[in-house]
Every structure is written in structure tokens, then in C-alpha cells.
Image 1 (spheres, rainbow, N blue to C red):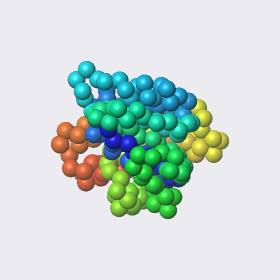
Image 2: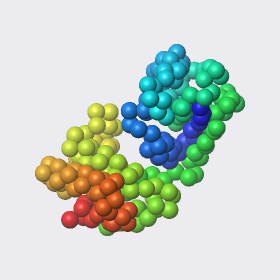
Image 3: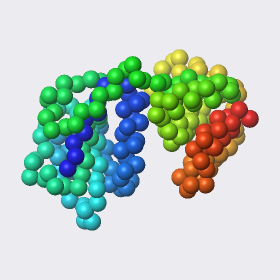
Length: 212
């Protein structure tokens, strides 16, 4: 049993760490709880022994209460991750390996997305910043998909300034453009996961598709 505690204001960076952890497990073996979950629910799921003893990953985001996992299950093939969008007192969570993500290390993805939406070649420069910060092509593709979904349908809870920005960005893309870009990115994602594309090639294609 492995216990991890991810916390700190650098949310994008800590989210990226979560994605890296998820890749180590089968999709069906990953369970995510939000802040509304109770300690009882989380512990009950943690103690569930899978039929084929596969490794399991259980993530609880912004736990509302401190809880203790039964020590009798130390040998379970599971990893428990507590994720916080702020700095917390790690002393309240004995036994957890803390990973702190300070704000100084945060690299915002939004300038990169804005340059993509503007069909601006500066997106290549922003991509270099991400590479130096340790972000990989999978994260950039995920955020590019997010941009395209937002261009297609404005997120319900988007603040007014985001709605206005999306309205301006949509003037450069028809709905057909958005659909075709989405298909192109799916193809890039498939090829890199299949080993048909090098990461550098995928990075170039990701930006270049938007510039056309």
C-alpha cells in the first residue's frame, strides 16, 4: 500500500502529476472521489479486494475530513492519493508521502491555448516553455481538446470574461473547422500512443494544425 499527498497552489502542475500516476494503472482500476465523498465511502472502496488482485489507484480530491486507513491492509496492491488545491498541514496526514507544488513553479497553459486560438506562431514558443517545465505532449493534447470543446460549446460555469474571449476566438473557426481539428488531434494522439509518431513530430503537428 502506497500513500501519497499532493498539495500546493500550483494546480496545473499537480494535476499533471495525477495524470502521470493514472497512466501507471489500468483505466478500470482508477477511482476518483470528490470533496463531497465521506471517509466511510473512500475507506470502503479502498478495502475492496479486486478479483484478479490488480493494482488500484484511489484518488480523493480535497478531502473534507481527516481519516485513517486500517493498518491491517498494508499489503493491498493499492495506491491512495490525496489531492489538495492548496497547501495543507501534512502533519495531519501521518504515513503519507507529501509532494508540494509551490506557485513559483506553475506554468499557465492559457497563453498557449490563446495563441492556438489566434492561429499565432508564438504557440511554438509557449510549447517550449512547457517542455522545459516537464510537461509532455499528452498534457498539451488534453488541453487542446479542452480548447476545442470550449469553442464548440461554452462551459456552463465560465465567467463573463471567458465567454467574451471565446466569442472572439470563434470568429476564426467555423464549426466544421473545430470538428476537423478534433479529428486531427485524435489521429495525432492515436499515432503517438501507437509509436507511429515521435514526440517532437506530434508537438509540431499539434500547433501546425491550428495555424493552417
